[in-house]
Length: 327
Image (cartoon, rainbow, N blue to C red; front, side):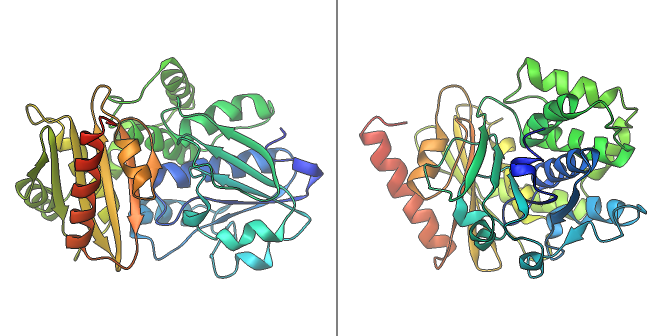
């Protein structure tokens, strides 16, 4: 209950990272649900220009509760955050990529819930930090928290399916980064009566998207022994960062590949999705480039560089780390 009642605040505002994905969104919904169960007014910051979660958002906007002002835009969020607000940040601990980093300075109660390795960046006014790199996803962590916040929480089908989807995508359909607690969280969500096929349908690809992925995989080249890099086009792609992550996962199925990187240019910002198997630590590579993540799942965002410059920087970073035996 400390998560949503920090300093006994009456209002809770929840946000994730820039270019929000299903895990970040679902975790936000879970915290919203906890806050409401504790009698708090609560709001979720959502960037409606983000195509990555458009299909899921449309489902929530069709719900009577969620279309009544639960979601607020980053531009209007400052009107909701003050010293009487608890600001809960999910699925990210690096201030530079918070959806609205300036909000941290407007409250004296910041709560952090994340499954990525701690970035080490200072966060002002932090009253609670729950960072668990062993967790598969923020959705897993929040699902676990929901079972202990209060007995009065009853998840709607769309809420449970969103949380299940967050776990599903971040574990690549339960094939990576899973633990006992991952399956316990999934079992709890299954008990609410979710429709697994409905969840799967949210992430099925169109023929055009399948071709985009095939083109990206076809562009893959060896960047260092055991490592490949590919580029994912973003023009006309609804969720380019999600597609890049999926391509990075697919590249690990290639024989002798132990690490993969996929570069995508999204509105002038370069995203790199990194994946690996075994004890190959791509998190360290992404950390050196200003990002972070997990041992086997990581990424970074670069500004004011081209894809070619990002690729060269990645190659140089990887080469240096291999020479230093740091990966």
